[in-house]
Image 1: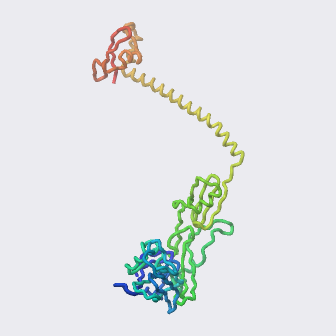
Image 2: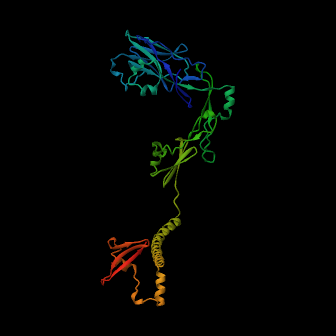
Length: 399
């Protein structure tokens, strides 16, 4: 059998033959594989026994006993659309469930009316049948269809020894003191033998605790599910719990084995996925604590304003000092000290010498306009200036 999919939940999807009867050109009456002695059975909760026929009775036989059957009536082809569903007594098509633990069966079609044509019956994965066919008559062009098997590990001395420390039931979520149990150890359950003649041996099935995921058959701790990444706080099942408490603006916080939905008024812990929850209101702060917060807010506002004003004033003072030091630096670099010495010594005619400030020089040169440039040298640029009384001067601006 061709394997399509295998899952650690104990299922296996394979291809199983379609059994054809009557005038079906190029088709054969192949029967489904016999799984007796294997660790597989046909899974009853996933598969449906289906027959496409007209005026016939389709039977599923196991151990020479009819275990299931369905019949169909005849009509035109107007009912074979994708939305049409076969029933136990259908039109041109019928379906029925199968008993549990079936490992072998044969398919038979008994003619009730004298109507010829191609008839066929098969076991099929019902999810695939409903979601992947435009018409049930499309099966006529197929030789095989998907079927879901259930697999198990037979319980014998070897397997019992391997799983011995893990056999039990799913652990409780809380201990005797009410503390959450976040044990990620897998557990295994024994399925005892049934009275079915086709499946009469006990088996072991292993699971991860709810809220965890992974392969439990490795007998190693399972991995925590991060429900916050799955946005489970906004899942419909959890929103219903939280909406009754007038909660909004939720913040999700994951913890091992579950998650918490926090808000400003309520927190709800969800355990084991959707298996249980516990909500509690956030305690209100004492009155003295609330009064302290109010007083802090009242005094912190003006204090912050004063701090900003002081910072602005300090910035202006520092900037002014930097400008003064900068002017002193340029004055010294351009011979200012030498000029002051000569003025104080009386070596030159003081009446013919005058010190000008920057503002006076900028006004006389139209703020050092490029149109006033007389020449340039290695030490700076010479500008033509004129005072308000008409005197013409030359101003050298150092680089």
